[in-house]
Length: 320
Image (tube, rainbow, N blue to C red; front, top):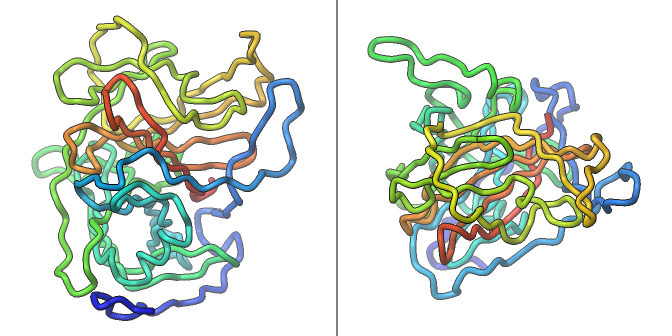
């Protein structure tokens, strides 16, 4: 049943594409694999259990939808994989997320460059089916490449080779959820920076000028998937002069006995961005995790304290 504020469903276009027709060699997988420390890697991924994470149902703040923009995702044209959203709480339900796009509630996405500045805007037209059960937001993109940064006064934007190699030119895109008849807006997002020092990842979560340092291995749980909680190391005050995004961070999970695992089980992190998505004054981390057989995007948020990040969602992403 349509709500009073709905304007009906936007056009849904079926794209008949093969894996090579997408242009970037993109394909989709069901979700990340769940691996046991003492068992060989599986050949196929298991079904990802959707979450309704620990955010108060009475929470207030910005309502957003997080996606990944690829310049050639829809028959050689720009498209956005809708991943997660926050309304009263975070959700990574694929049905809820895609329905939000299809209802016209995400009229405009802001695409972020590697420098944390808005590289361009994507105006949504509808949904395009690029594979059975897989849809992307289709529309018009105006601006620079997601893997680019400002080149200085009077200079063109320049591509970051590390971003291009890790994401095939794709990048973070965020839309404010609105009523379909509201004019599209791009709110100002407070961005941050991330840096890597040894086996620690540093980021100033609460904007107090001091970085919280998180052991990279703690971002993974016992099944070598994203951990539900990611706690900071205690009393580590090293400086952090970082960037909005960071790529190709190798994380070697450990077994319960503390021994190194099979090198084939290494998980590669690409931090797509550090920014305050929900408007609560604390930064979220948007990370693409490349597992042995699949790639997912997760969002970690500090709901209660900057030293304790919570996994608020995980969704399938473009496979590179």
